[in-house]
Length: 175
Length: 274
Image (cartoon, rainbow over all chains, first blue to last red; front, top):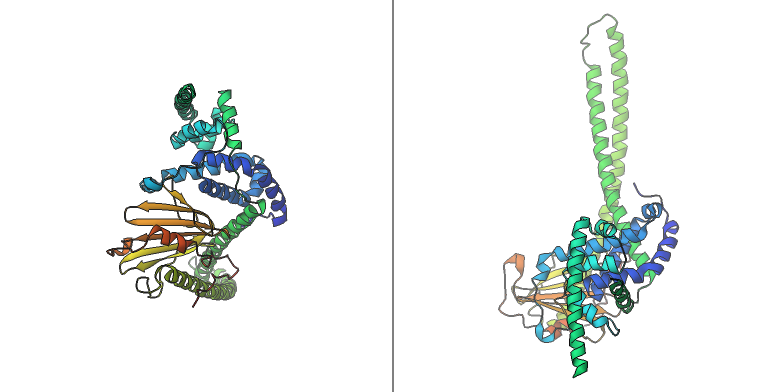
């Protein structure tokens, strides 16, 4: 009924994996959801599931792909829950999500946050993880055609937003 | 395209990482595995009992057929029927003994589970009473607005616990204490605002209609979520006014005595003061 892996068989490799890959997974989650706490939640859930499935993952070999899929699917589940989106914020005390530090990060961060969740997931997998269209489609559980169209639309939006931001910055510098 | 890849890498590298160790993830993984194994054990026991019962019933059925009249009516059938009947009786008696043994083992298991559930049950009741007493001290020192009737609503599992309390005669005060926002079912999706609260590493505020929700990340890693609403929802009751501010809710949620239950350790929140 239970897998025969003992604690010590899985604990060592799991801890090694977490030590090596948690940062990348957290950053992926943060780029996708834009919130530090939710990103941490997503990573915690994904890693806990990976620990349970470790014997199978160890046999198959591609732990990254498994954890990444759980992470992305958890975010898909979140964004599908419509009732969350119905809750208004408090404009008078709203604070934007913290912007990652860096010279040109602010513009890209704002442009990324403006994308639809599906487009953001596609862009992060394609351009942060460097996955192919087919790999991204497998992770997201959609067709390669959907990934292509989402990525294409997202890139057009990103280019437009970054170009407008660049123009604005040039204009400010000229003044 | 390559430029975007590089900028994405730079953006990702600039994201600050939370102070989590691999051992924390290991502990969460182990807890999840325990939880899953317990569920599988329960399902396995149920299956075993059902199969055992079926086997006994089938054995008894075939025993009755063997002991019945010889339908074929052949001359040698009488002796054969007696042998068959004896074998069937022996099989039925063996099956009965097996069933008794199985039933005894099942009864013992159920008794142990019942005992454990009773222990857990009383601990949960105590925890929820403590939560209520702490909230009364923090939000309702006069004790006129918070529910005084026994707490019947329980929410959560494993390392999360919460309840819904009547507030100001018809309204709602919901509390949930856990280790993550997911566990306390607090969902922002970009609609929350961050607040600074003494004694907390971060705090979130969310307003939705007549409800105010806050989630406070206490310094010990616990997450406390409080929701106050003029309507109780399922109960169909409501109150004229909450008489609670966001700051009061944040301060109450930051109370370090509100502690998440630790699975299996029997820990409880610090008892409220006199």
